[in-house]
Length: 229
Ligand SMILES: Nc1ncnc2c1ncn2[C@@H]1O[C@H](COP(=O)(O)OP(=O)(O)OP(=O)(O)O)[C@@H](O)[C@H]1O
Image (cartoon, rainbow, N blue to C red):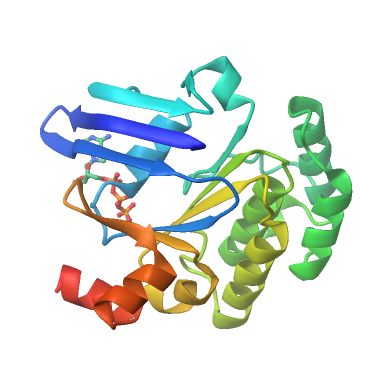
């Protein structure tokens, strides 16, 4: 298993955001991390990325506890803005190249072109949708074993959403795992190999999309509506 989570809990001052969840994630798959606002997706991803400390429980990636070693193999795209606005897209790529040994500049250039952006555009001039596409491109350009995209489809128009989904599929291979959080299950369903449903900080379901559909006789979208109704 690439990622193993055991009895993980996280409480904020006034709120228990994650309640004793355990699951593991395989190599070479695209996972949908699904659940409505506030279900705990971001909190979990940030703990896996090493940006938040768990209140209790364990997380390991390739058998290593979250730390310097695991951060080297993990790429996380946060919903927050983390790119300097004065940079041009090309500079963002160079910055990442300096920072991450696994950064693939050629792939970045291809993805930027595929996303209908230009390397010479300045970050401060991008619309929010364009900035999201750039953040996704820069994250997917790392040859990281674990790539986590937090809500990559939020606030993006239909055509761009298709491009983002296609980019995710393009960058998926047998050596990496891509976890994508979303509540736009309808559009996500077609690219997902595996699904994880989270509700109020608890794990509701984990399994291969194919098996879930076969066993329950329902699409992931239908099941999602049922679980969160
Ligand atoms: N810094 C914080 N302080 C207090 N409570 C927090 C904090 N961050 C998140 N929470 C709470 O923890 C719960 C889980 O939030 P989280 O952001 O992980 O959910 P999410 O599934 O990613 O939702 P969304 O899709 O809205 O981002 C929510 O109830 C939220 O209000």
